[in-house]
Length: 434
Image 1: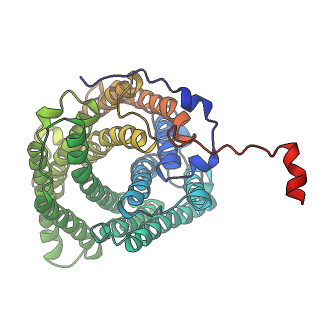
Image 2 (image 1 turned 180 degrees about the horizontal axis):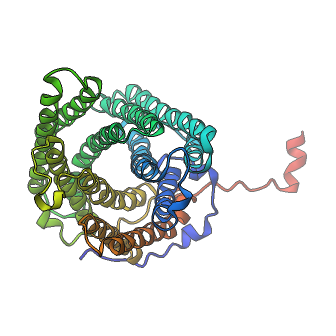
Image 3 (image 1 turned 120 degrees about the vertical axis):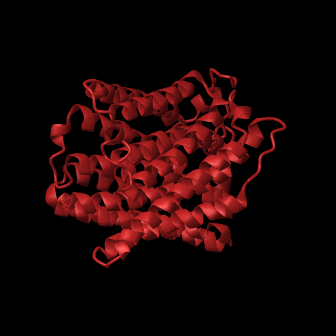
């Protein structure tokens, strides 16, 4: 097992909370907001669903807030931070970052409790959130000549468009169209997750495991990106051409093939990264595990999209969209996210890259939440109990993260303390006056 530390922070304890530090990089407010909202939204959805009766009701609200309100919010926070390292220019900090975070808050409140006017205000705030984030990313990519990352702002903008399309479908009560648009957002997020993870997992692993050498797999990564984007394009065309003769019959198969190939490449990459070498490093194997579930979830999505599976098999489990949604979204993205929330926050906060007991506990709680939620998909008398267990594990996981990291996120880095300006001495005042 990796070394677990009871981290002592005398330097950090002496630092006071600072709005300047809090708004220095995108991960600080957005990691904290995303984790807090993940805790609150699941508590509402599972334990008091009767309050979710607004213009974005019940399952529509839950699906939207998990994908766009939590998962994609964390991705935006990561990209706004990582792009500063990649390009040498910080996309957003200070007041502009505060305003971006305010847009996010307006969207959350509006969708939850704003009524119909609040729904449209929240929709406008959310679209503007993605426009600002995408434009800020593209600005620093161009300024820093980071050509290999030009696609990321475009995908971020596409996620905003998918969000808008989802909200419009939800407002019209068109569940079939809504799920198609949700899948577009899910696949778009998978494109970003696969791209980021394929870069950071080998890098993190080789830094933490002495002597470990693993390939970056650039070529397979390019193929993976091509087919994941092709799957998204096929999904868009399936909505644009609903009655185009043979088109709709061909497009689901094309989308299914692209998803399956993307998933298989992911699993192949994972094997090439020597997973057995990181078994004693929880900060690494949590990333491997999340990446593996994304690959498995893409294969399940391919099965569901193809329509080739007899719904009577396995009680129709693989034929249900909920299966691949939770495999990719919860077991994939969220397990990957809890690893990234700890690893990248510690790194950018100037802390030791080592887990304490609460951080490791949050990993196991997230894994337990994913296992219980997937088990609840199997129709049985135990399903409601498993769902509640998943919610409790999830809430404890996010609560532990917030308890451990909020004090760090709102304070300056201990290795870069805020400057202390001493007041001028009385004896110096006459000289200054002259």
